[in-house]
Image 1 (cartoon, rainbow, N blue to C red):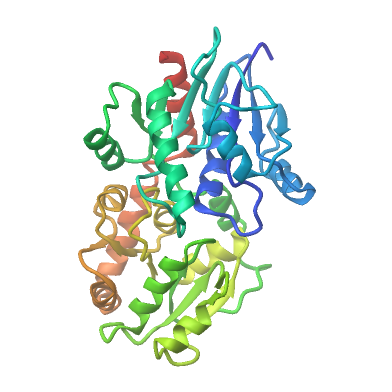
Image 2 (image 1 turned 90 degrees about the horizontal axis):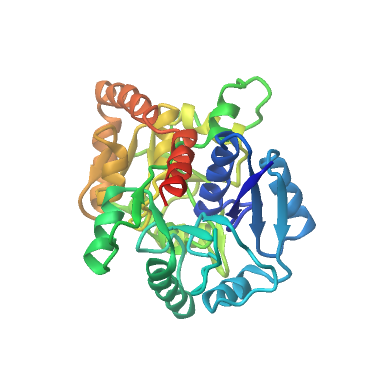
Length: 369
């Protein structure tokens, strides 16, 4: 190896993967797979437990090296925000989020690109987190050599608020390679109890507001009489999905809470679902939308500009709130021909995006810089 790219891995190795963690892992895999001859990919992350480090090693077997800082993520974010570090990161660097080792005085050969997933958080954000996000975004647009965004919509939003110049590059994400690989392995050994007919919804760590929106959608008088399988976390601090459902008057058994599923189980749930219900208005990455599309599951989602762009006409984009989402879902479930049409369109749409193609765009961005 004569040269290397250091990839900042954010929120990786969690037992319950976050959207940022999934993106970080998938992009790193793509960069490893497409590294130019003579280049290696080195990972760097905040302090990890031995268990998390082992999961990262298993997920990213092609890393040339894995560097772990001595401080946890929260402290590392603050340190890098002020250009403080005890573990220098020089040369070519690609940050898979706004957590990036930016410097006001880069040395010869130093080059840092960052990733802006959207102008809103995926998780419930405290005042402190909001302040960090706002400062990190401004700092990235000032000091980063390049900025990667997932959609043209995010690029336009940034351009309206900031002087982005020529820094921004749209690099579309893709469906999970791990999920598709697990889907290809078949169903014979997968143990998962699923209803005969159901809609699939996916929750995320830290996204309590999305869980509340999901409950409001299921509780709507416009919601079709169908069970909703929930994959992912069901607790957020003291808030529990079951408690939210009881408070909303949802009858027992309507929500089937399976908790965190592995890739094979989640792929099976997608394949058997009548539809995928995505309620988040803050999701500009659209990873679960792309996963569902690749596995032939039509998605009903808010008509945000980013999700509509990613769906590309192969999903049901809905203007309005929970009642409108529920109504659109009911119309889709009542129309078998439309669901079949969308299944085929969605699979074609998903094939337009791969992590290898995304990674090659990042390599090209560094080459052009």
